[in-house]
Amino acid sequence: MERKAKAAALCAVFLALTAVFGALPYVFLLPVLIASVTTDFKTSLIVSVFFGVISLLYALMSGSLVAVAFVSQPWIPIAARIFVGPAARGAYLLTNKIVRKEGRLKKILPVCIGGAVGSLVNTALVVCLLVLTSGSVEVGGVTVIAYVSVMLISGAIELAVNTIVLPPLALTLGRLGLIKPKPACAESAAQTASDGKADESAQNKEKEN
Image 1 (cartoon, rainbow, N blue to C red):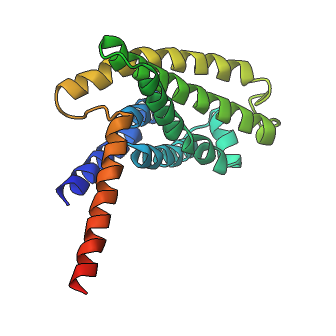
Image 2: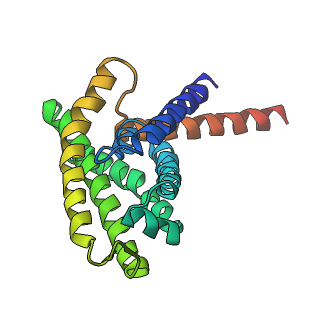
């Protein structure tokens, strides 16, 4: 029960950070990426969906070309962002498995790869969906199609920023004891323990009957 309460509180913190960072250029993905390399698939998915909703809300208050396109197709910011957290989490876990030798590389590389993949997925999905569904949307004489190069440059900057900033930030928070990166083995162990408890509970009920 205490573990669930702690997880819920941590998820709430990430949601609050997402709401704050959602208005900041180039670093708006950081809360999602931090959640992806420090929690689990479920939390990363929840934070990703919330980030999509926050993106849409901010778009309603902005007059930029991307914001206008988001408002014209409100499902895009949510659909595109749903995959960011899980993709980053999956890349983190896979890299963590590949790098077997304990050390600084094993601590930093999975976080870097997870952040990079999450950032790339975000840019790729947003740009592709906007081009396919809202290419003709225009603001100030500029269409979404003509604006693709600007979005790709912004995506490249976001990729660099997230890849550089995420590892020291996540590791520092871990050293402070606020959050702790959760590798694949930990998730597997947690699932095994959960399954074990379920089996034990079922056996006890059978004995009682």
